Length: 254
Image 1 (spheres, rainbow, N blue to C red):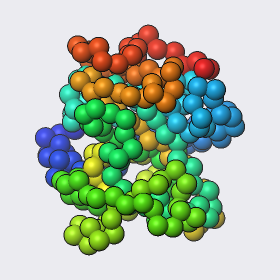
Image 2: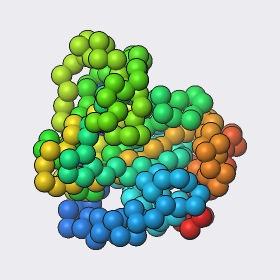
Image 3: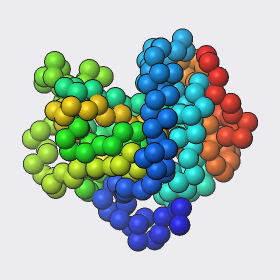
Image 4: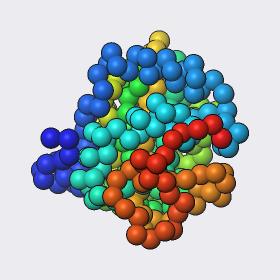
């Protein structure tokens, strides 16, 4: 089964995350990892001031990962048939990289209303030694106050806010989402997650796939004018966003 069973859907709704699942085998990820390092992260696109964001728009391999049937069918089970890929994010944590603090993604999304489901795909094997993602079951059931990051020098620079530590004591024990290369998990935009400093001798690369539904207005065009959403499945009955159907989309340099 590529989609989710009824019991899996219930578990996702209870915990706020689900996985791991397999998209590709580790040996299949080797040339993909090499491609991303040499051809994707080697330059910054003109259309967006980052090497790591929305690279599915200009790279076929990144787009193929983001639109992998195993990922999309599981998201269909949660959100229904109509899905829009609106963002992707490559996470690279080199040896010695600092932590990403506990946070809920909703504070970072230019969406109205804030409806998003994410998949985190391991490009490299991710374990507790090289800073796999950690999640807190059930933390998606409330909006947790966030505060300014207290120690920005030891924290990943793009994360300026963190969950209030006083609130974390009310939550359950965190779980390490250890993944083999080619595995992924899905999670709610309110699920608390973090990654610890990478204290291993190996880097850790992952790809986050961000998906919403057509009733949501995406304000990404305020950041870069050439942004477009990709209709991965179903239809768009609302027309709130600049959308291209998956079968008509071809990544290109912008």
